[in-house]
Image 1 (cartoon, rainbow, N blue to C red):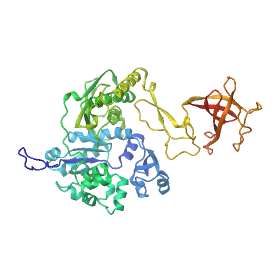
Image 2: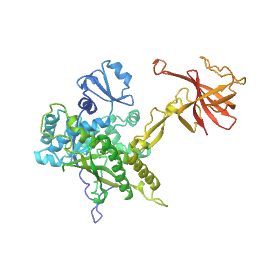
Image 3: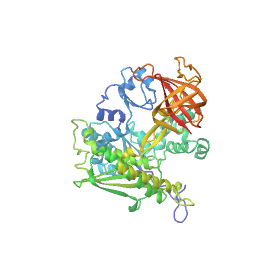
Length: 536
């Protein structure tokens, strides 16, 4: 879109905002050292979904790099220390670093744990130049937190973030030229990068040279966004407007919050309230300011930014991470760290929380429906469930999450309302030995004892080779009278974890239809028959 003057003549485009990005290399590894005491000087790898997401310098020397599978990384570096990825740990450990940066410059925005940004104009004018400001920040963070960081300055946060990886200050207007020679893998989209390389587009400059309309038509909206970044245009070219005061939400607490679990519950309720209030105006936010007041009158403030629209769950996560960082931040600092950074933990429990949406934009998807507000019934249900949790506790309201497994019991996981709905086991690829459809309507929390008889009244058994001693003719559940079997199918055997005797499970399962119209899933294990589920 071309900017125009009030008279309609083309005007000069708004100059891009200079951004100063503070980047802490290998932050998940450093956070594991700060919080869990893992020696980052040795070979360490942080894994998520069985793949390396970050590794130490010693691990890189042995050929380990992000993207490797766990087994491949351990084969390249036999002495590799493996740590699970924990975003809460990363955010908690990063809080003292943000506090140190905030002592030098104002208006710090956390992009993600390990990366924060500020507008470069203020510190550059105060310290007499961007390079001097960068040196001051690096030195202060090193002295205060004993953490290594690098600074990048460029037009826009994306280019500045890439410049920080080499500690470079890109001159004004030179961001497109700086990005042009970088490989397409820096876009952070592996599938798109692989496709572009196969098409002969190996650098961001090659990709940026394509017409934007053709990129959108051929590759889709996400690739169009990546095309903007490759051309040196920031992901958020708009200037966030200052929201009206009534958009902020506040919660006061009679009992001061001094525990992380209580803070997490409060965060979820306040995040839902903010999200609903924004939705009522057809708005969404990309940045959220978190303000807290302690019982001693101490005021705490932090701004979190997200590359996209913040959902209710995303707001709750960032508020929970920030409260975790404030409440336990002092313990997360390295022992003996110097500097004058005050303790990150508040001096007393938190009695007031306030969420202020800093970057607000119109969200067309949140328009009212023809017969009432969109999602109004769902909002009422969420408020009711949250109220029940407030009365009875977080575990009093649970929802079922369907995942992978060989039996219905393994496929169902109950999670508290509002928590991440992640399955206990992946559903793809299909599990060998998985029961065929249809799925049972009721999965019993505890199997019911049963007996299966043949036509002569003798108990039916299953051999080690999964052969029935006779066809099932009657089935009795518990102490009830036996019922005739009108049809059956199976067996579907399970022989799991045979290499670990204490955890081994071996059983055969059958689908049985009875004369009274019921259908059951029965299993034979350890010489006993049990009913595991009931079909509708």
